[in-house]
Image 1: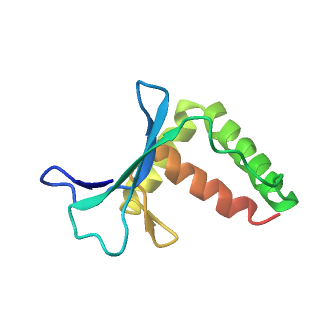
Image 2: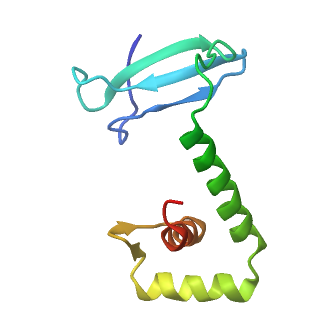
Length: 116
């Protein structure tokens, strides 16, 4: 169904679980004007992956888990050091602006380990 967003929202994309157990999915189609989009109601458990994760995808998940665990285990001093680096770099790293310290730290750690 086509929907019109409230003033101030140009476009929206994503899904959320509704109270009735259905997923509400919002999309924006190229034919939609700014401020308009489409909304679909889907069964929350309807999506079933048709193929198993590839070896590359499994490796990426493991790498994400490792880096996420490193960030969680950091001391306050380490996080403060990264916060100072982030501030000094004006929130930028590798040409991207980060709004959260966790995202900035994860990007730095990904860059350090590279593509194993």
